[in-house]
Image 1 (cartoon, rainbow, N blue to C red):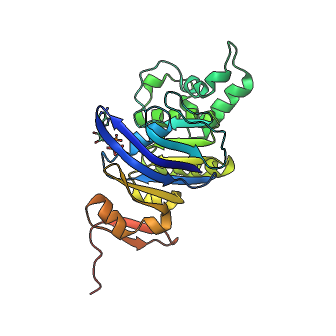
Image 2 (cartoon, rainbow, N blue to C red):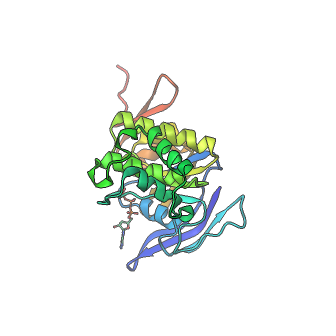
Image 3 (spheres, helix red, strand yellow):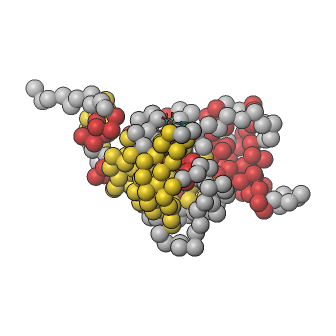
Length: 258
Ligand SMILES: Nc1ncnc2c1ncn2[C@@H]1O[C@H](COP(=O)(O)OP(=O)(O)OP(=O)(O)O)[C@@H](O)[C@H]1O
């Protein structure tokens, strides 16, 4: 579990995150970060990834030796940024192998190449494994970088809008893979999403941010209510219950029975 205490971030003289006190879910679970555009979600994720200077503290509750500091991606952390734009001529499989950069030498062991190909195969990308990244679509690139993040075999996985460029079928495929890998590898996954229904279905814990402050945080089932989401986004949000018991959120007021 990550414990953030009084976490503050200033960017070019402006305070963007204002003293956040937050706890993630435990290892093996997914925490979702929700909130309107500009509320500070990416800033928070970049801070966790060691990319921004901050005040306050970031600790790992069950690993007291784990150190977090500005300037380096912390050990055992993988981060998928929001913008995966890249014109690299490296092939997809080479980009995935970069997830193992620290252990790569002049020769890439066959077992690592196999592992990289498997990561791509799990995302349905085997056919483009040898294609240069610059010749892939935006959605394919997003999945290649997700494969690279998983290749690092992190214990904390930070994902900034990992399905933003994907069609509905690929969204489900990617979220199911993230869920399965989070459990199987006992990772802690922290994920920014704009899709409320995906967040409800795939996360166990939720942080709701508003203008750089915590509106509410806790178990997803308790936090993701129409009332709190309407307050968060300043617009009416209602829900119905799907066949599988999950809430399905939609924009608008719940129709009154006739
Ligand atoms: N380099 C910067 N200097 C000053 N302010 C910045 C800088 N980068 C971002 N901001 C501001 O910080 C705030 C938070 O930005 P951030 O990208 O974290 O929002 P977000 O919640 O991820 O938004 P979105 O959902 O649109 O991706 C915004 O108001 C933004 O204008």
